[in-house]
Image 1 (tube, rainbow, N blue to C red):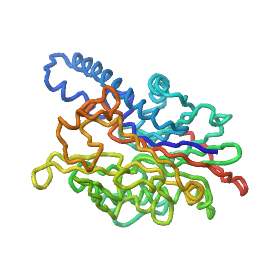
Image 2: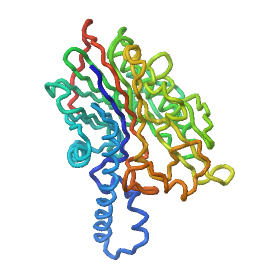
Image 3: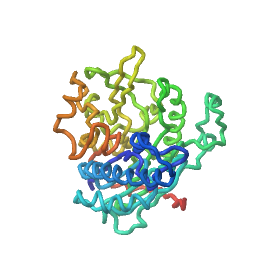
Image 4: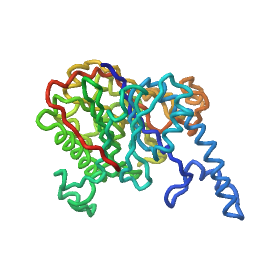
Amino acid sequence: MKLRIATFNVENLVSRNVYGPRQRPQTAPALSLFDFADPAMREQAQAAMALNLEDDDRQATALAIAETGADILALQEVDNLGVLAPFLKHYVHAVSDIRYSHLRLLHGNDPRGIDCAFAARKGLVGDDEAIVARSHHEATFGGLGVYDRALERFDITPDDRVFNRDCLEIAIDLGDRDLTLFICHLKSMGYAADGREQTRILREAEARAVRAIVEARFGAQWREANWIVLGDLNDHRFAIGPGGVVMPTLPSGIDPLFDDFAVDATTGVAEIDRWTLYHRDREGPDGGPVERHVQLDHILISPALAAVNPDPQPQIVRRGLAYATPLDPTHPDRSIAWLSTRADRYPRIGWLRPQASDHCPVAVSLTIPDNRAGERAKIDPDTG
């Protein structure tokens, strides 16, 4: 059996115009230009603007998903099933030949309420009960054996929850074979100049926790099992600088997932073509902008899957990114005149917005081998 599997951080697919104490940043610039004597008028204006902006963004998000042609979607930054289901119905199904169902989402630890989610091609399994979801949002550092004294500077104890968001486990019974996904959204690097280094130890603990979960799930046979760790891992092992210079960025918080464990399904692609996010600081140490193209979104497959998939045909979809993102890291021209006239984006994509997301979907095609010869591991469904 061959399946196409994609991961995509869809960037705040939410049903709320305001979350927490902060207003959504998409509406703030325009609202700052106007005075509203009545707070209710401001709220109404913000809601109307948010609807228009959301519609533009989600049309592009849907096109990016459709371009992957994926049978299975692992999504990050989804509010709830109440927004995911209509998004798939009214946006994705309008542009894609694939119909998605078998939706799963269990609430994790993110304070904004954005979670990991799962969707699969309608009819992939004969019975919806063949897909079992389990959240690990309550797992602790001590419980998974990943506590380190270095975490004390964050006032973290062994009893604290390890995942900043979640590791959503999806077990799929494909009839004559099994496939288990571990959909992750690890701790953000933040926006400070030294944010990546300051938060690396947290992602490293999360990565070790994911590894511990996989090894506990399959026991001594974890290398022979069909499993995938995928999602927005929020760290990179190399960066692409101006001129297309590839620079190692080790150590990385996600190293435990690579060191004698999983295999990166995009390894066959040159590093310069593997990036999934473009980051630009407006003012670097010398006063000028600093830019990096990095790979934050990963599909890491088990040794068993890697053995039967030497060429998983990786695809990184970038046509939904805003025009301000240079798609060719090697090209020296970063001017508005150059970038805005490239015919390499979806219709209605803007300079900064609308866009499909600030991340790119990553998709691969995998042959899933029959692994029913041995005793199958089971998990209990998590009611959330």
